[in-house]
Length: 317
Image (cartoon, rainbow, N blue to C red; front, side):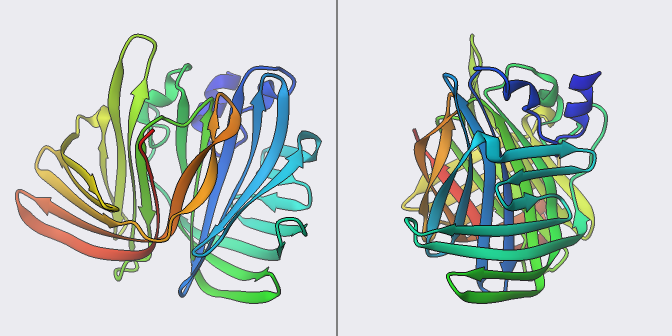
C-alpha cells in the first residue's frame, strides 16, 4: 500500500526508507521561475553514496550557477501536505522560501515565491505520471515526474543585493529520483511561448536494464488545456534525432500526429548530477535556450510557436 501511495503521489518525497540505510540513492526537485527576461531555478535534494549522506541546493540563472552543500540532518520532509526543508529553505507545490548566504560561493540569496493556477499533464491509474507504466517498475535507474507544467509565480527574489519582483511570473516544477541519471540524454522544457496557454517538455534518454537497453521518450505539449503526449509507452516513434553545434532537431510521430522540435542551446552552465547516489558528475544546463515546436495532424500544421527562457540539457556520456 505504501509503495502504491508513493507511485500515485510522485510529488511527495520518495526516499524516506533510504535515509536510515546505506543504499545508494538520490532525489532532487526542480523549481524554475521566470519573470520578464530573468530566470532562476532551484534544485533541492539529497544524495546517499556508500553510507555518505548529504543534502544540497543548486541554483542556476542565465549567467551563474551555484552548488550549496548541507548536512543530511538539515533535511526534513512531510508528505501530507507535501513539503521539504533544507536548512532555512522551504519548498512545496504552493510556495518556496529561500534563505542562503555563503561567503565562499559569493552567494547571498533570499526571497519568497508563491505558486498558483497550476497546469499539469493528464493522469490515469495506468499512467500515474509522465513515465506511464514505467512508473511501476521498481528497478529503474532514474525516475522522472512532472509536478507542474506551468504555474503562476508571485513574490520576490533578492540575489546578491539585487531584488527581482515576480508580478506576473511563470513557473515549472519536476523531480528525479533513483540512483543515477542516464549516461546519455537530452531534456528540455519551456512555457514562455507567445501563446500564453502553452507549455512543453521532452526528454530522450538511453535507458539501461540489466539485460537490454533502449532509447526512452517522454514528451508533453499542452495547448489551450489539451495535452498531446508522445512517449515510448504509447508507441510514439522518434523519426529524427540530430544534435550538432548546440542545435537540436527532433521529429516525433504518434499515429496521425507529428511533432517537430527545434532547440538552440544558449549559455549552458555547470551543474552536478547523480552517479550511484553521489552528486559526482558534471553536466551543463541552460535556462536561456530557445525551443520551437510545430504540431501537425495528417501533415497539416495545427500549432506552431517559439519559447525563450527554456531549460535544456544535452548529456552525451
